[in-house]
Length: 203
Image 1 (tube, helix red, strand yellow):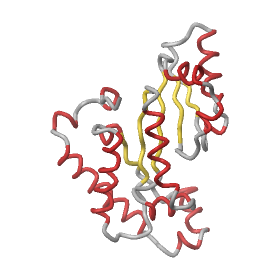
Image 2 (image 1 turned 135 degrees about the horizontal axis):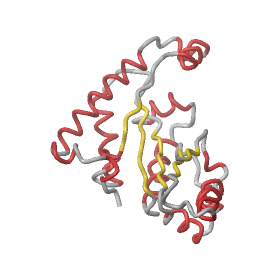
Image 3 (image 1 turned 45 degrees about the vertical axis):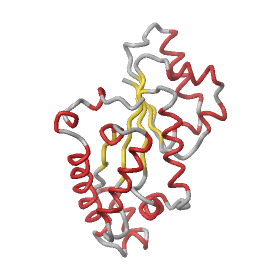
Image 4 (image 1 turned 60 degrees about the horizontal axis):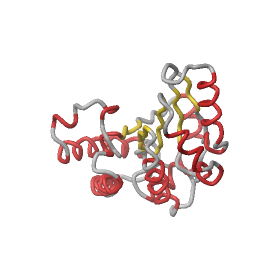
């Protein structure tokens, strides 16, 4: 397995394509699994690659891609990224555009937030929005569990806006994950929830 990570690998959109071409030249397509991350921050993949190159990426045997939603609403997104709140919605359009290429696509969700206010309703709305892209998408989405240790703990203590919140972001995350699990139980049967994530269809 080869993992192309970042940051955002698509800042050099050809990187994934070049790796695929190198694997093909060595006769290893389908034998070496290629995986890449996507933080849903740029459309360079489509602006730089040709339609033919996009098809080459999407048709490669043994490629998976995971995209990370950096929050469950505008407030949590801005807290987690320090980016403008309007970029929260861009994540969904970028994810859907990639989904439509036919790439074997998965999702992460970062559920830390600066407040506990209305967490249940906000997470429900996030799951609703995922399902506007595809009804099964929540079953291909993994909530990340962010722990305050090591580098993360040092970063939090060194940034005033994090330090002032104490354990609130992680308490919010715990509540959000519990709501997430409840929502999946309400929206999908037990049989659907036991399907391996690789077998869940979102195309």
